[in-house]
Length: 281
Image (cartoon, rainbow, N blue to C red; front, side, top):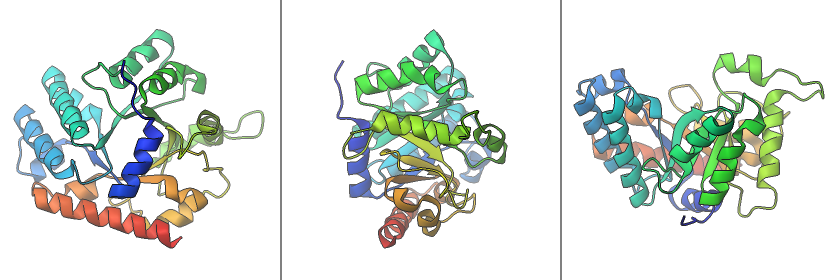
């Protein structure tokens, strides 16, 4: 299996060259309708083709939400496969938003689906859920290292329901979210320019100074745009770790479609705003 340069190094370079921004591809029914498309496989194909044309070669990272393709069955997954291949061929990093999490051979199978170089869904990184225990992610961690891919582990998510798990306090006095950050810091120890194992941390969470976000790895930050956070909020939320933040924007970019030019323009604007906000800090 051909081994890529580690994801962390590739991501750092992409962020520096194209701006620190991840744009989600989330073809839900309401968005297809807003683009004048039917909620069927033909609408999905056209939506995806336009999104790839607009975002490839434009932004550092694109994050397809697997569920919106899976709901169309095998034909939807085939559209996702083509999108992943086309984006990666254009030099755009792909983070597959699948939030997989399980144990043993099942977790290993999920890892092979998205992190094995020979898989048609091979992505540069994968979102995963650690809430069967961080150790349950070992098959994905091992295969990511082997293939040069990365992971984004759910740590401090922006949805209000997440707090009942992520803010739960362990016997050692540290809460679950902080524990996940500590595991990732260990994974990334000694890596330059940064490690390949990142956390998902919501940009809408306000002051996070009580958490050690300096995990020497990327922080995928949903919440910019439709959820209310702005690029200017990033330094206050992430502090010294803001340079490694990859804000994720979906609806605030996709609402500019189906115009390819408009999608590109708004993506570039968001990337420039994030770059300026982080540099100003």
